[in-house]
Image (cartoon, rainbow, N blue to C red):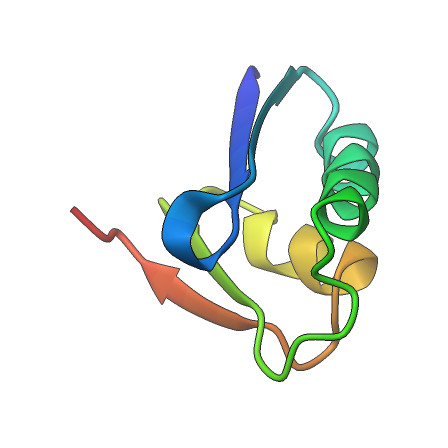
Length: 74
């Protein structure tokens, strides 16, 4: 399956687009990009997902245990 990810900071000063076929590999790359955008010391990190199988768990493993997620945001 092809996975996509977008990272952007408040005010959209930084934004990164990532694509990959392996969920855990993409989530690890996402973590690196989040840090590169200066988001390592945020109070709350939020992920918006489409509810695909295993997405929330992979993001929590690679980004934060207390990651807030929003499902099917339009």
